[in-house]
Image (cartoon, rainbow, N blue to C red):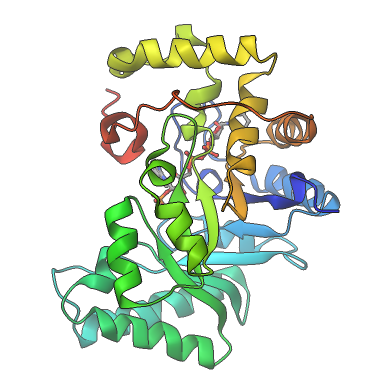
Length: 295
Ligand SMILES: NC(=O)c1ccc[n+]([C@@H]2O[C@H](COP(=O)([O-])OP(=O)(O)OC[C@H]3O[C@@H](n4cnc5c(N)ncnc54)[C@H](OP(=O)(O)O)[C@@H]3O)[C@@H](O)[C@H]2O)c1
């Protein structure tokens, strides 16, 4: 039987960069990462998401026992508005560096970190490079990390990726509502959902939420009220919502510590699904952390 826990994947930004609206602890120490991975393996979690752009994340992973884990990493972003031979060279060099840092000869997934790169003039050369890496056995599955439904539609006009990683959570239901998720499933794409906790915003005490989120404070209050009404903790409801969304194959979670992972595992195995219809904000200013201005 597939448990919800085994459908989780581990994000690893927080093991290589100091990030996260709810993070008070900075970068997780390597010894804590080792404890997290041991626990994850023991409950059947077998996917780790990383990227060349996540600071020391790949190198930290490379120091760990990674047997049994499928690693997904991502390309560097191209510099200009079109793709030239030097961009393809950079992609290949960056991927080689990722493998070196991870201490691996191949990975499960390689995603274009900025999907627009594939749609830029000359983007077909990036795709050819990914396909060549796949044929050479360096990567099993290729795909892209996306931010919007528009990117998904344009991407699918170019090719059918093996994997798409996308943002999804109670406050961000854009890709459910615009049919993107169904479209991906109709094309047989493996879907990895990130940002289930929206950098931890969804599990923060309302009194600690930064002033930036004032315009959606009523949405956050409605979210906490709904959790109470449905007798769930915010962590249980947020993770359950993403895990139970039809079309999601993997729910990526970012954890800084073993205790956070254990809290997630406990929450995700509790029975019951969260009814999250009507909870969304869907405003990119609040659901896309890249747009947050917190200082
Ligand atoms: N209270 C609890 O029990 C508990 C339990 C677990 C987790 N948490 C909190 O929740 C957080 C994880 O939330 P989540 O799983 O929903 O993940 P998330 O932080 O919303 O999503 C991870 C995504 O953040 C993006 N990112 C990368 N670098 C970034 C940067 N420098 N600044 C901002 N964003 C960046 C990455 O996407 P791109 O690659 O597209 O940039 C990455 O895929 C943890 O850090 C922890 O603080 C709390």
